Image (cartoon, rainbow, N blue to C red):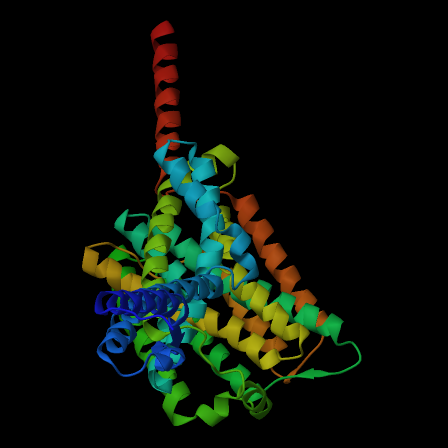
Length: 469
């Protein structure tokens, strides 16, 4: 038996506490659901040394782990938003065109490169803006969600139009908006009916006639507002401008009534029951409200930047490519701007969901014709500009043909591939007409500059010949 003195006993106790301290430090930092679990260290007892070991060291370790877990959750949330917003579409392969367009503008590349890259960058941005608008609509009432979709559905065309108005390029605004209506009525709707008919040869495709007849009525009203200024062409110009402004106010009132009718008065009239039953389980937001809001604000800013590039380089690109501005504005820009809607409409038609395809094509055409066009006339009026509703003889005739043909194709409530083929061929004929026509005389932009230079050269040559004589 060995006798231990007081000093030796205190040394043994302190050494044992040190050993227990090291074991506690290595084994007791257990975090479950952001709370520290001290249960593995209960064997230390309730003495003073045990209290120190159970409270001091584990708390320091758990605080650092909680902070790291918080940062990790925030990082995961950001990555999830990036995955849903940026990589959540097959058009994400076109996102590199955005920094390339900015770099081309900064380093002074050719205008044709800036114009082409900007158009490519606008394709995924337009599709993502529609996606983010739908995400915001999940957190609001049906009325507010419908107004968001109606306002932001064609934000790309609206921004391009306003920037062109600011630069006094009225013809670019008219032709681009006319091309958007023609593209939705003939190309988007035509390819949807064509692809849907070919994919469903053994079954008859049908859609809700009551839904399909509302939009053509508004389009016919818009066509009337474009026809009347054309009839006034041979009168004083001021009368055309006054008539266009008054007609624009009427068109905006009609569109507001259409939105109210669609959201409140007769929603059952504009929706098909099978679509509602199938879509009940799919209405779920994938990102938060504020995330969608900030993403929407950021992408709208980038759209405004790229739209500025498009508007500022369209004339130089027309000269560089040897293509008239009317063809680029009416055909090329709307095709690229409506690429996302085009792809979505075709996908729904392939799945035999024609009501959704018609809602995409006809809804976008109605929105541009009855909302964006008169809004641009009103904005030009406020800016002191002189934009009217006169689309020239070819433009007004093309619009009338598109509205009438599309209305006749949808009057019986059924569809087949031949209807889609006829609509696509009509769009092809109109495209050829604008390509053959070239830039109309009197159009603002580089064409006037080139014409002035040509007139100057002709006058100088004639004066030289007169001196020689």
